[in-house]
Image (cartoon, rainbow, N blue to C red; front, side, top):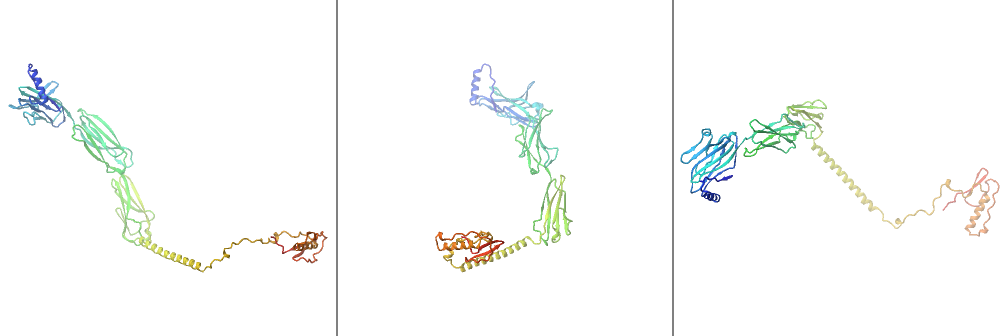
Length: 470
C-alpha cells in the first residue's frame, strides 16, 4: 500500500509545516494521515472496494472526508461525508456507491456494477481543523473476468487414428488476456490462439492435439486458467472418450472337459467403446451339435458332453466401430484330469516297484557271484607273454627248403651235413655238395628221415614236412 500524508498550511507557516511533516513521519500524532492502496483491480460488472483509512492526531478535528474521480474534463466529487451534515452522493452514483462505515477514521466507499467508465484515478480527501486538507490517490483498473469452458474436438477419438484435436480450452473475452494451459501425462501438444474482441477484450483458445489410443480411455486432461480477476486458478477436467473395436475374451472352458461332464458353458465377454450390440456363436469345423443352446453371449451345453463335441468354436462381437471374433478349440477327453492324474500315479508306482525289484535282483546276483569266485593264485597274476616261436606259416607261404628240381644225392648230402653239425664235426669233414646229376625217377629211398620225394615232369622235388622256422 502507498501511505500518503498531505496538509494545507498558510503561506507564512513554512516552519510549522516542516515540523508537522517531521512529526507525521515519526509518529503521526500531531497531524492527520490518509492511507489508500496504490492500485485497485475492479472486475467488470462486480463490486469494488476503495479503502481509505484516516488517522487524525489528538489535537485535530475531522471536519469532512470525500472522494473525487479524476476525468479528462476535470475532477468530479462522487461521495462526501460530514460528521455534522451527513452523507452526500451525486444522483448518477446514488444507486451504486455508498460508504462502508463512515467515521472520523474510515472513509472507505464501495462501488457496485463496475464498468469501463469507472476506470481512472480516485482521490480520498480529509479536511481537519486547524491543519486543513490531507489527501491520497489510488488508480482503479477494470478487469474483465474470462468466461472459461472446454469444447470437445470436432472428430471422434478412434483408437489408432491420426493425430487430432482432443479438446479446446477457451478463456473468452478477458482483460487482460488470460493465461491458459493443459495439464496432462499424455504425449500430446498444445496450440495457442488469441482473438481480439470488439469490446477491447481478448479471447484465448488452446487446443490439445494427440494421437488416440485405447489404453488411456477414461483418463482426464485438465484445463488451467490464470487471470488477475480470478481469486485462484480455474481448473476444468475433461475426460477422454476413445472409441475402439471389441476386445474379446472367452471364459468357461478350463481345459478339463471330458465325456459325461455336465453343466458346462462358454461365455463371450467384450470390452468395447461404444458397447457391443451383436454377439454370435458358430462352429467352424462342423455343424453346431444338438443339445446346445445360445443365450445372448453364452453357449450352453444342456446335456452331458460327447466325444464329438470336440471342435473349434467362434464367438463374434460387433459394435459401431468394427466386428471382431475369438476362436476356442475344445478337446473332449475320455477321462477327467483327476482320473488321468490318478492313472498316471498308479502306473508310476507300478513301474517304480518293478524297477526296484529289478535293482534288488541285480544287486543280489552280484553279491552271490562275488562270494563264489575262487581266490586269485600267483599264477593268475603271471603275465602271459607272447610265444617264443611263431607258428609255421601256411604251406603255400613257406619258402622251399630245397630248391625245386634237386636230386637225391643232393638231399643225401644235405642230411649228412646236418648230422655232422649236430656232432660238431669239423667243417673239413663235412662232405662236399655233389654236383647235380641228370634226370632220374623218384624211386630212390633216402636214409634222411622226413624227406619225401615228389616228381614233377622230369624234375624230382624233395620236401621236408617237419621243417619249421624260429
